Every structure is written in C-alpha cells, then in structure tokens.
Image (cartoon, rainbow over the protein chains, first blue to last red):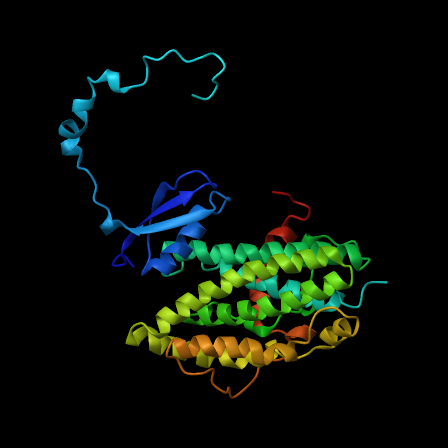
Length: 93
Length: 255
C-alpha cells in the first residue's frame, strides 16, 4: 500500500501540553490515519489527543538554508534573557 | 455451589480467546503494517478479556483453575465458542465482516452483562463486562471504517467483500441461537438471550453494509451448529494444537 499517502502524527500527552510530533504512517484517508495513529503511537497511554496531518501539507525548511535562516541569530546574545538577576524565591523562572 | 451464569460466561470467554488467537495470526499478514498493529491490538483486548473472565470463573466455580488451566489444559470438546471465531482467517474481507459481526454482538451482549451483573451485585463481572463494551465499541468502529472503504472502494474490493459475505453468512445464525447455558444465566438474572439481540445487531450490521453499497447478508444454504455444546469443526483441533503445545510440552514453565 505504498501508494497510500503519508500522514504525520502529533500526540498531546496531557491537557496543558502541546501536541508533539511522534512519527508518521501510511493510511488511505484521515479517519483510518487516526485509527492507525491510535494503535501505533498511543499503545502505552502516551496521549489524550491525536492530530494527523497529510505529510504533503507540511512545508519544511531545507537543510541547505540553515545558515541564512538561523545563523543571524547566533551573535545576538542580548535576545536571551540571561542578563537578569533572578530573585532567590522565584523557583520556576 | 457455582453461580448459574458460569457456563454462559465460559462461552463468552472462549469466544474471546479463540478469536484473539485468530486475530493474532494476522501479524505480518495484514495488507499494511499499520493494520498488523490494529488487529493485534484488537486481539490483545480480547485476550485480556478472556484472561479476566477465566480468572473470575476459576474463583467462583469451585474448581480453583487458573486462566492457563482454562486456555491450555482443556481439550477441544470442552471449548464452548461459536463456529465463526474458529474459522481460518481467509481473505482480509472475511476478517472485516467477522470483526463487524463479533464486535457489534459484543457491544450489546456485554452491555447487558454489565448492567445485570451490577444489579445482581457481582461487581467483578460487571467491571470486566463494562471494559469490554468500551473496547468492542472501538473494534466495531474499526471494522465499520474498513467495510465502508472496501465495499464502496474499487470494483475488486467490492466483489471480494460480497464474496466474503457469502462465506461468512452460514455462521451468523449460531450467534443468535440460545443455548441451555444462556437460558440458565438469564433465568438467574444475568446476561441476555442471544436471540433477543438478533434484530438490533443485524440491523446495525445491515446499515453498515447498505452504506458500503454491499449486498445484505445472504440467506445461507446451511448453518454452523454445535459450538456451544463443544462440537467444533476440523480446524479447531489444529488451532488448539498450535495454541496449547508449548504449555503442554513444558508443563509449569513460566515466561
């Protein structure tokens, strides 16, 4: 069934967290992709919600574009919040 | 004294165990690897259900038997499953028709078992049955999705689905035939007579077949019989031999 479209699977582990990409699978349509995702990726209670997205609908950045895209941010340390003194009793900042 | 519903619950457990074994045979044989996993998952749900029921049975029937005693140390004539679940797996279309039938039946008969066992105060049995309803609702939906796609898919898949209906039809009547065990259980207020579920289960299955543009379940030329009395077809012995040989070759082995 290699002619069936590829679907990317996103699973949300619990309420409050965001959906995370966990893998991909083949399925003839969205409903069966969701069933397959349930059987492949939530067998061990990994999730409370599943998204499936046609892989063809995802536009990805190319590895060749890595430097033009990401390099310019490398020398701008002032964008990182590392220059603040954190008060002692703020535990989770 | 063991509760009057014991023989009827044993039949349910045997249906689950034997069908779990058949579903497990699909691993590496399904049309796609994702479906290998899906059918294995259904089989594991049924295996877990059989284990819970056997454990409960061994505790209440006074025999003290374990789940392994029920699964591995009974011979063919002592099993009480229907003919449909022991059929060799055949075409994928046959399996989807069988799964649609069995899951539709399980949803309704376990729902009745859960409510009646709860009223009778048999909480453990009610709990097992309640879990079964949730699982079988998913199994039924999985079969429905496939029947719709195969029936209303290509000419090839449509033809093979109709051929599968012809092959499975002889096994349908036995699902809704009341055994002495069913009557004894219902007389004691547990469970439901299979005959009373016929119209609703076949009504649901018929609606799925119609939506899938398939023929209705055909009227078969013969009917499978005898499963509930322990009379099985030739395939049952081979299947049990494969399922039981390890436990019998190495008695007491653990893994």
